[in-house]
Length: 124
Image (cartoon, rainbow, N blue to C red; front, side, top):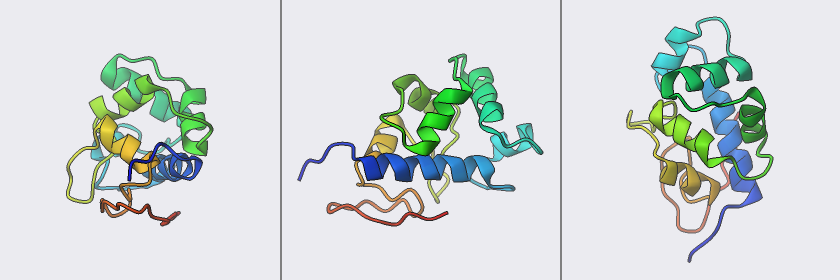
């Protein structure tokens, strides 16, 4: 069954990005953690992504993404991929297609598991 991006999937993806931004000592985003040891704000993430990739990412774009407020801008997804900010539990980096699959509720971002019938594992 082919399914498009869902509002719930956008919310889940946003919560995952926010958790990775907030998580201290995360082994999934070590470069981010070492660069911004004490400042885990949306602005700090936007600045770091811009510095890492050369793609201008604004604080408001990060905020919209984390809130699941509409479809994220493709340049923000590309910046997340280029910076290898999001990692699967096995340590491999998310590609844009994987991020879209999270928003389509095909990949559970917390486990990396693929589902054909969707999932509902919103975790904080």
